[in-house]
Length: 224
Image 1 (cartoon, rainbow, N blue to C red):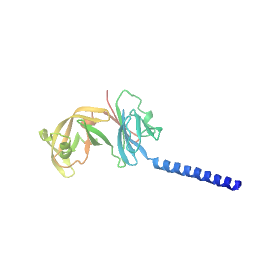
Image 2: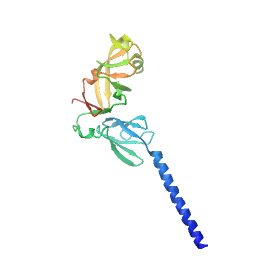
Image 3: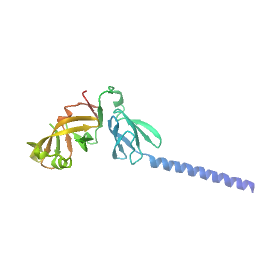
Image 4: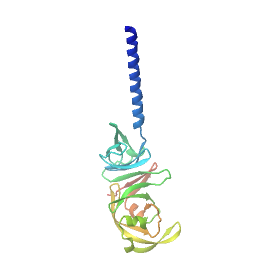
């Protein structure tokens, strides 16, 4: 009888141990996430977590539980389930640009080869697509109205769109910022049509910062 009880106890212990292992594996699977860095700036980073983009500032946590511990514009230190890891846009980028006194933003290209990044116009959050072929920042009238821009008070101009020449207005934006790269008094064109469908970050802004592409990553850097 004693031998039978001993075997029964051993089986119970083995079952409990197996159950603990299964629960641990389930917990690990539940917390496994695909995390990529899409943009880096000092004090903030754009993370792509399981396909969803999250703009975080130092000390903020995403709905998925990813904490941005710090970002210095070259790497982002994140914490998930108490474990910390340093992430960069590419393995090479952290060793190339060492002048920390200049503000810098790094933007990874999308699957289509475009550079898309969050930013601000007159302090309001927007999303830009970098367009080196655009003379100035360009947006449609719907976006301008949402941002409170009195575009009809601007200088009437003509712009080329996919549907031909359209009426537009040249305005002056008080400030445009990508990360902590802020430029003031920037020319922009507001189309009277619904094109462009995204805000184009043109040369009226790009011409005031240093720009370089390294291994598929766009580096924007202040000149001072």
